[in-house]
Image 1 (cartoon, rainbow, N blue to C red):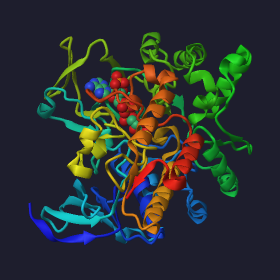
Image 2: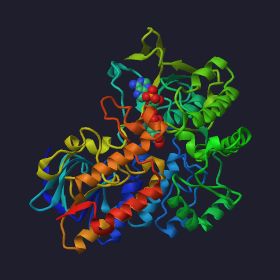
Image 3: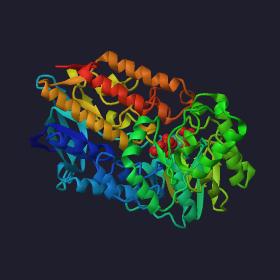
Image 4: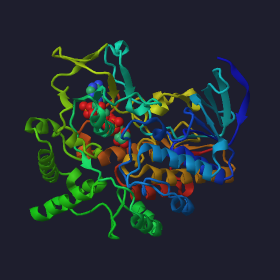
Length: 548
Ligand code: NA7
């Protein structure tokens, strides 16, 4: 592949044009840093560019799942629904990009393959392949700083099932949905995977498929979303109180919520076992009716105590049995792990889909998929399910997958994949030792999916911009965490999970969805407020960093 002779020199190279990368680009530019953003896709959006499957939708309220870094931005944009669908989120990110004049600093169609740190000059050399101009070539960049905004959930997990190549129908993954989409109407559709993405695509496919086969290995506890067109008075209320809402969210242990009656509802600190059964039931019930993340915010001990969790489990079991008409199917849809110990999918008619005649639930826990054959899916029992479209909703190599697919070499040529061989090691999910001036946004061991990612990247990209400014103003050239600070953060993140039921349950939150991936806390579950305080502390006098 030809390599261009010219090397583009900038202060910062950012990788990825999703929520995090766009925000990073804005903040680096604001710091007066020359910046180029490299993006593999031919448009902005990141996750919201690739996940174009029918039904893809936020399940934190749109008014919250949006940038808070400038009041004009949050005032000017109007969401059409309480929970926006993928096309609207993609439109929003395009709007922000243009509104802030950022597009000229983005190079699309660039896949970053290598990043190498040069000890002598304290700079990173970044190589990207590009098909811009019609033929494939390599482009090179040199910069003191690199920011990986490569996404928490951006590397699709395609299970290695024999026979994938032999399949004759349309085979797609929710995380890399083709545009244009394969036709779903009137066809026989199979979906493997029944978590957040699977639930969304199953709901939509059930309405149009001739026959829908849902291959379920593990049932999940789904909470109703209760989406609706945006109520103008609600929108006006939120916009009027945005600064107060954002402040409260930053002080809370999870995403905040706002109700139409003017109450701001944040995660509760009281325990389920400290209140009586009637109060517990009525609390669960209003949250079930309100929808969204409320259910998981009701009592602090639900995710810590088996006994408290069993109360929520009983409530949710009753709901599933109340909706699904066939009792045998209802039992199959009741999970066998504690609710809230995995990411709860938001649903809008998921359970009802199993009351339809065209929807079939196939248990692949007891009768696993052994092969993909030309006409469909073959199970261990020998049963073959014929489908015209086979949808993999099998998730992602979360948190670390995207960074580890780039050949990243830090001090002394050390590979990131070696440094992280026993699990990701970061300070605050933003830096890793031995890799100076390399920053992650929404990285492993940051609050990521336990907070609102657009709000987290607001904080992190400002923080990173300040660190870069701080290093430059002191006449220094590099910054990286001390190995001790890094180890202590990793241990802290693990210990927070270890005190919860999350640790005992297998999920991508602990890396358990990818064979061979080390088990560890891939996010920080201690709450944004604690995280932020610790980050501010670390930056004070650069105590937890080595500089040179
Ligand atoms: P998840 O949460 O990782 O779910 C993947 C689903 O695919 C889950 O039901 C898995 O079952 C199933 N799966 C994965 N591999 C296999 C194989 N080999 N055979 C059968 N079934 C399999 O991914 P999502 O995309 O739904 O959600 C990830 C996040 O992205 C989510 O939080 C949203 O924010 C968007 P298992 O549970 O492993 O038995």
